[in-house]
Length: 559
Image (cartoon, rainbow, N blue to C red; front, side):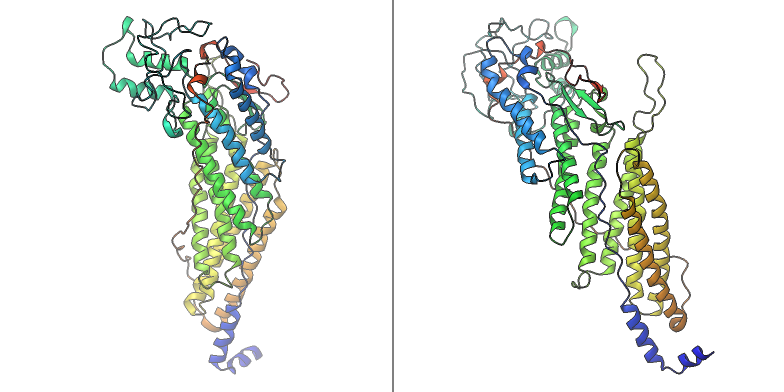
């Protein structure tokens, strides 16, 4: 044909140089989509709470004025923190959020301690048990070793050990607090009793009651953690209902979860440019660290599952840690794409390694979310005694659909980047393998499109998803990939004539240097002194009815 005669008339060297020029100018893939996972269908919100009102029955007579400054500070610090963590207040700086939350958490942490008998001078502050808890200032155990010493309304203990006030010690901010120094996590009462039982005498106490049981009962009765009811919207509840619980450590975890959510929402709302990406990257790393602190707090609390909201159990917080970290990885890929032309150290293979790591992070989360979706399976209804049917967890379904869509999307990105790098080698093997890699990428993008539609459907009923942007980003990736593949095919069919291999290249080793930014531990506020611990009598607290609270019910703090 005329075309063949024309091509035959061109010197081979000129043909090769034209091919090289053509392939070296292959277009780049669109920047990775900046669509982050919406943090929850509903904001993490809570009702106002006044510590003076809630704790009035738990304060010894004559001690209300003593403890009032502490409780006023707690109430105000909570209001300030909740205001800062309001998702609608987009102008609040991250530093302000962190500072306000940390102030409240430090005050709240004092409730992890144990009540002491009024009139106790804190003698023996240096005596610590194996778990780091002061032992000398505890009220003495009565004869049966189970019931704590009865405290008279006048404020003095009816029973006192010999020399209870012999060694006086001044109140210090940290030295004599009834939790480990440095603000370390306090073990659950169950774990505490096991640890103490291990070092205790094997013989039983009076009445055949074991020493471990006596320790657990005594310290449970002195714990300040379970005196106040808190109500928060449960992010793990598909209907968006709230949950009431009665544990200050779960309150700490809820504040940390709210901070995580607001940081993620701030990252989502920030317009991305070269400078803002660094800020968003930092917020996401910080959110991951806060999530880890929340998870640690929940584990340390050791609360029964039926007394916890769904968003603090069943793996939801653990899933958030992983999701937050991998969202930050998006920015690593996007920034590398932006600088690939200007930075010789950034190559298509390098980006393929990061994309490979991102896809594998999503793959690893799949099992965690599957566990979340099956949480509660086979539970028994206490009223009927029959097993409840497994209810579909809409939030888990939503996370799972998102994870599978992103996994396929980044696998497509990895193969596409690898394919572009191979094509730009401009030799027979590079072009052949480049075409096969691009074909694999196209297949991945097609599957990602199906998964993205499933994600949009899963989220449609309770949260807005920008499906147009999601699908457009996928279509743009497929379009550019096919454009490069067609150009490479044309060169191969006219110059190299290399058979296309049946299998793509193996993806290069994963690469990532992303780490969560640890959330610094928050020490106990200095307002918590021995004098404050002597103001409380936890046994006088009203029983808190934990459980789900529908949004249309005006009963958030009823007991």
